[in-house]
Image 1 (cartoon, rainbow, N blue to C red):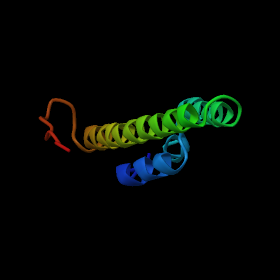
Image 2 (tube, helix red, strand yellow):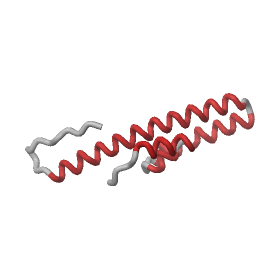
Image 3 (cartoon, rainbow, N blue to C red):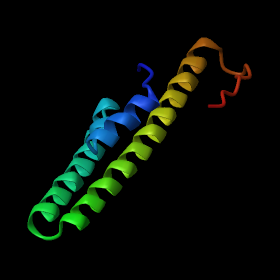
Image 4 (cartoon, helix red, strand yellow):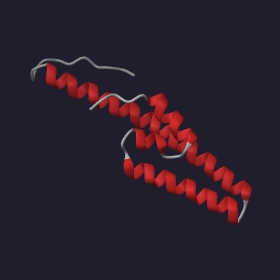
Amino acid sequence: MDKKNSVIAALLSLLIAGAGQLYLRQYKKAAGYFLLEVLSAAIYARLDPLAGQLLSFFASVLSAVDGYRAAIEMNRKTVIEADKKEKPEGVEREVYMY
């Protein structure tokens, strides 16, 4: 598994909710955030423009935070898995802090 850039994931999600999750290959999450974005567009067009904009803003921010944190977690797991492969069992591993 290759390492993913958490900032890119967050910025993509700020542009379009769910885009950062697509970058991270989290397709179900991406679909959920994208549907929330579509719902906000429908609310904007049919009911209340302000409510639609607010929902879109919160969906994008929530998606960006989730994408940032998910990328960090994915990278942490990648480092731990690589570390396990390099060192034999019973040997202490280094702890990586991000």
